Image (tube, rainbow, N blue to C red; front, side, top):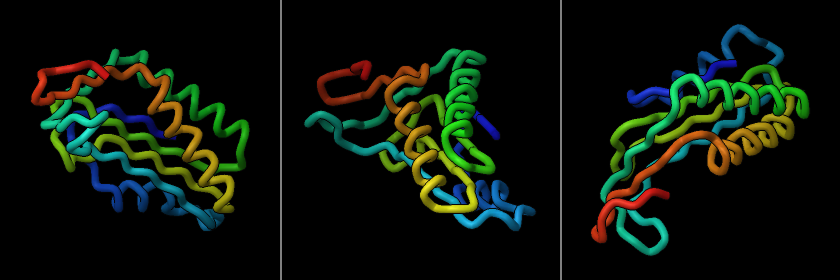
Length: 135
């Protein structure tokens, strides 16, 4: 399992290839990529700033991956989450899960992503025409 929190963009294809390489048992890879959109709650979004608490964030994500591994038959999980200044069309997050079967891969990927969206210790501030707002 790999968890990275970084300012730099990521190459989705490269990350998926690295996760599944050298494991002939992998029969399914499920991936989710979240991107910055230009609208949220009816307001235009010019950009956003993502912050986190180093160490705490990675530990929390590692724990949720452990829960996913306990619930589904999966081989590996990768989470890459960006921080810093982002603008519309920028990639924010990548979750990749490998498994022998698609059902386990899809379920675990959704589980991890739902956690990242609702509970992971990230703070997001959007820049809108009305001013900056924390969401």
